[in-house]
Length: 222
Image (tube, rainbow, N blue to C red; front, side, top):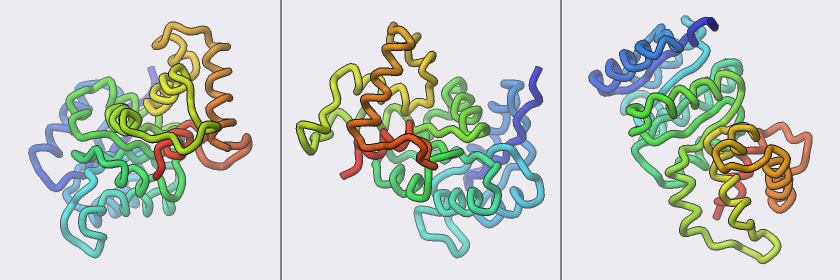
């Protein structure tokens, strides 16, 4: 059995912080090595404890951080100083602004989930596992809401309905095999759709960004 992922939880609300800690520890996949209440304490905990993953609220008032973006700014600092540490940012806001802000400097090792995912242990654990290995996740609820009202900018950029389905599953952090199982497709069919999405969105091979989440952000960007 794999060693539990060492995790630090950051939230300024004590009950949320401790509730998240207990939920994660019950899974057996995560060892919560620290729980803190603000962004300054989070940076210190990462420096001292060297976790595999950090889970942080998007807003943690106090300190010298941008008001309302403390968790995002802390995520950027952690990825800069400790690139091996994955970060899951939890937010109660479905607005794409926060997702674009979070992924502004790259997508590897970062996830953006709505806060109600704390109650959906499988989704939360999936995001934790993804960022621990350098992957990326955007909450599917955010993606679905944005795609429902997204105006395609040009006929050549238009994704087919199947490509949009695949894009939604990519946002969840699913592999091609996982997408194939979810959508009842062959893996080769998924691969063709993924490659078509990358081509239409101008995401060339060899990029240092995580192309799967970059595809979602590119498609949904204003």
